[in-house]
Length: 353
Image 1 (cartoon, rainbow, N blue to C red):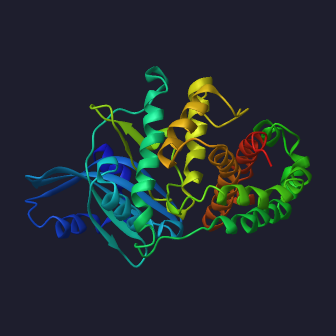
Image 2: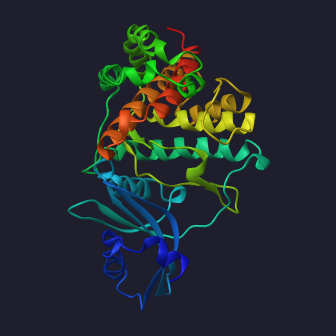
Image 3: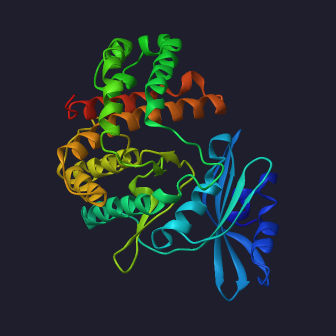
């Protein structure tokens, strides 16, 4: 058995993929594969895969299939359809999608490019920031036209903050008995987490007000827009992929992980955001490149963006806690929560209430 066959063996939830490809591309003379595995997760119920197949079709020598069987990814097909319809030059070509009783399958044309790395400097990341904003502007008018996409209003975020607080409170013994890992991630003693988060409560509503003052319409929000989910093409343009976690929300929320990627480039840190700092030179460049798509520079846009970074961490924290609960992970993954709290407190320092 070859390496690829070994990787996907005994996973019946992938058996439907070849027939899906044949239905989507009737002219395909053959379907061979998978010939490559880009990603594969099956911690029940988190069953996801991104696989490459060869097809005997003159228009598509190879295709990529994304298979999602997870409640949080129910809108993944709708998100891919929306961005491809509205901004086709900046995202993978969607050949077909199919919703199943337990998830969705997405068929994409293959795409080529180079991954981002520190050797290439900040220019590709600036291109990613501009491309992300362009996609979001392109999608604004049709953001409510795809059924199946969750909408998260800015007004929902204070409630999400309270739910995150309650989850940490429910698992507080884990934080009190920290062996140093959580403190390292946050930059302060883990036992202080409830007091420090409680002190932020009055700020959350004000961050929402600052965000809404931008008067930017809701659009597609990527949900996981870091440098690993984009490539630099030979013509210098950027293609952004992996829209599985997307929803309809305030577009600025998508830029937070871009700033984390910028921090990583400036510090040479490719791992988790231990000791994350806001702000660094590349982060400032990314912020300017991103905001340029939304109008003339202004103090209002600046304040809204900085508030959005704090709110984006709340949204991600809530998402990760729900993900951990569905997967049955113990204590709702406090290590990742601690890293997110670190980032939020760094963003807080820049918001002018």
